[in-house]
Image (cartoon, rainbow, N blue to C red; front, side, top):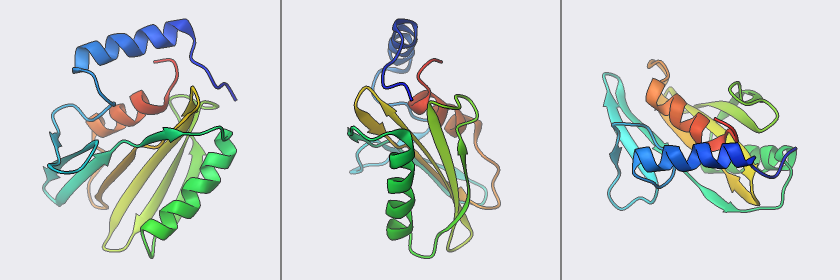
Length: 148
């Protein structure tokens, strides 16, 4: 597992941050949630969708982070059920993606990566009847893939 970004990846992220106004990767066009740090939302015909970005210091390997996230998720979302956990499709080997069904028919996509000594764990929550929003999928990829 790489714990560093290449110079090219760092430059790409810097360019992306400059274009998006800086801050963590988030879905384009979504609104910040007042009072919630690094959380954005939008409304779909079936209900609210939300995206949150978390980052903390970590020396874990990707596999260890995956295990931590599974435990944390089932504790945070009582009654959740893991649907699948896979290498993140846009950058396998750099990040992972876990999908959970939650009570009330909601779905949770949780991406995770260890980048430069930080665990990055963005979450995308949506009604189960709504297809994945392209803006949310892009934000998840931008948050966890080392080289864009």
